[in-house]
Length: 289
Image: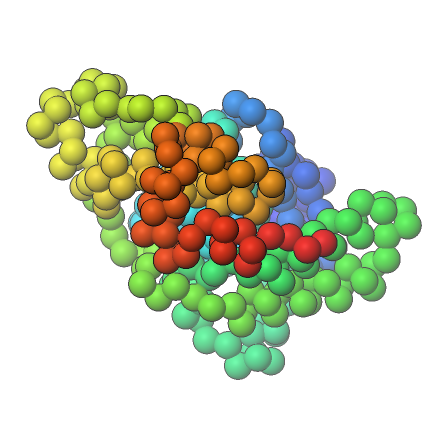
């Protein structure tokens, strides 16, 4: 069993290589560096802390106990103390933020807020407030010898409270047992992750998976819970969210960047997927700090 918060100079750095690391006595934050084609290694482990995993890019094949699921942008995935979890396969070009909190510290805050354990059954919506707390915690930590430990403690407390009181998406049960993932389907999913902005033919994916064209679609859906086309769209929309939040690209440029030929097609698909048009999403989620 790993005690991450109290071993950040040793075992934690092994688990979180290619990450920027920030911490105080109660909380540990690892943010993956934006290194193109860097590999996030396969790892399944457990530790004493509560963990809150935030995909900053779409991440398939996340594990929590016996469940394997797709990590979407815009959610926080929760892991209880001592649960086996991690990433089933090594993946390239993925980004994430990982928050680990000492068990007793978080439990005291949960008791104070009369919080139930149901936050560990469903993903939590990622709020702008939480993004802000993560940002200012990192900025204060980067002052190094001049950092204010009291300020870090206060930010850590606010960060934990924001997670605990966050709105959960109860339509997603992260412990719902999934069909076993097949290696061929994993290869296809990873291929889509890297080629989502191109035209991908069903024959190409079936060949990569080593399956017949007729059987591939049903096998993919059994493994991932959705069709190859819907998976591709989910990747594209997730990438679009990042571009809307972090750039001033026009909708036409974003459409081309993620693989849509027309901005109108992108807009209609984005609204169908999220319930809101891209410009409104940008307006609501654009950072103000």
